[in-house]
Amino acid sequence: MKNKKSQLQAESFYAVKWNAGVLTLLDQRKLPNEVIYHDYGSALGVADAISKMVVRGAPAIGIAAAYAVVLAARSAYQDSSSNWRNNIEEVLDVLSTARPTAVNLNWAISKMREKFETIKGNPETDLLNLAIKIHHDDIVANYEMGRLGAELIEPDSKVITHCNAGALATGGYGTALGVIRTAYKQGLLKKVYASETRPWYQGARLTSWELKQDNIPVSLLIDSAVSNLMKMEKISWLIVGADRIAANGDIANKIGTYSHIVSAKYHNVKVMVVAPSSTIDMKIDSGGKITIEDRPTEEVTHFYSAKTSSNSIKILNPAFDITPVSLIDYVVTEKGIIHNPDAKKMLTIFG
Ligand code: MRU
Image (tube, rainbow, N blue to C red; front, side, top):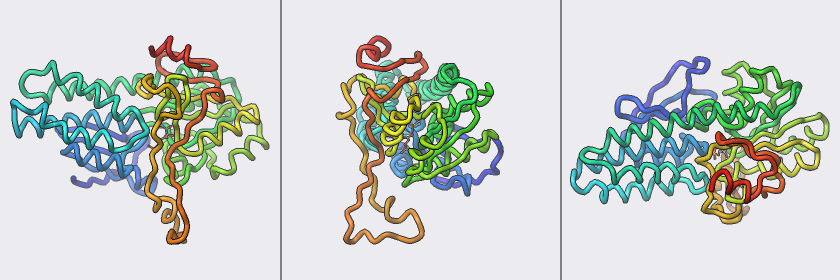
């Protein structure tokens, strides 16, 4: 792995890029203070980068995993041109468990694996073409979701988003932020608020940074100030992404999403969940079956300068929560808008 520093330029950043046989990832742990890219030549390196949050956000994780399969296949083929399909499995097991909640990781690995059977000879080119397609399709889906979601937004809207569901979390443009970007370009937004998203501060460090790159004014507030904001101002929309959507429409998203949505319902703020079809998991019938990632407790105790003693305190650090579908007004995917989602509507589109 080698480090590269780049000069920050408007819209010049990317979360994931394949370049001359290596995978380059923007180290999102360093933003917004530093823009540092790392190059990866092995699938295990990418798996480590996913679990350590170098790259994060469900679609971006899936895209990184697709490129990681290319790296794994290259190495397995170099070791044995006849047995690479078997040899690759150990590495794919590690990759597939790098993070448990975002379904895009295993969705992408399955897509890549389906291709294995049709390949004759060296697998690298065929697999790379598929990884590039997965990446490209995600960007196209984001623009389409941006267009569809913005259709729902009325002029002069004030919107809140949580965590980061922007270009950094996807192949480019973003899911929830894609809608916000499009609506802003269309002159529909009076105000954008981002909640900071403890403990990793994706809202403070990533969403605010991304919107600033696009010259979209954003106000940042702490997570626990969101209910109060909804009480004090007329907020039209809460717009969030998702890491997995179950067959009945329940969503898993960044911890704090559920409490924001509960507050939204109380204050008559409409809730829009924006995610590509690669985030839909029709194999899981409800959100209760989604595995919620427990992340290291140090993320709670050591992310600010006055360190909390963790000796005598039990620390909880669930990275995601589940919101029941009954609280969601709209699910927007590239395949269309679902109003008042439920299992039947989900099946009609994604069955
Ligand atoms: O832990 P992360 O940063 O990978 O979590 C990402 C999220 O939960 C985002 O909020 C997002 O909505 C899903 S990815 C577009």
